[in-house]
Image (cartoon, rainbow, N blue to C red; front, side, top):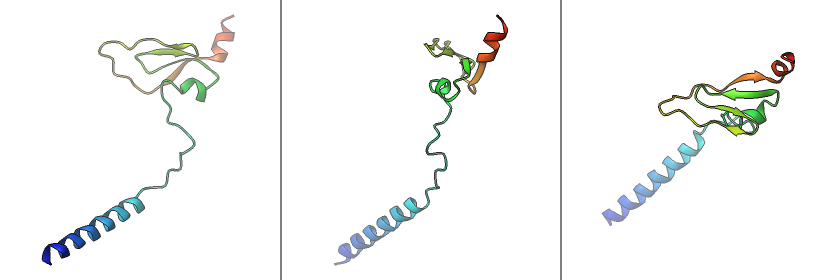
Length: 88
């Protein structure tokens, strides 16, 4: 009888723990906006012709390989579309 009571108590504690964890989740206000990443940066910034994370350089055709010990940083546009037309 005592082991049955402990089992019921354990189930109750587990259920309450799971329900409180589910309600503690913050609302995701950026659900429709993906985080800027090297591989989706061009789609999110169509006016950028080349972008880089300090290790790889990307264009709409693809990205270069990463260096052996490179530590990627924040992705930045390194050649806006208007910079390409100014040089001509």
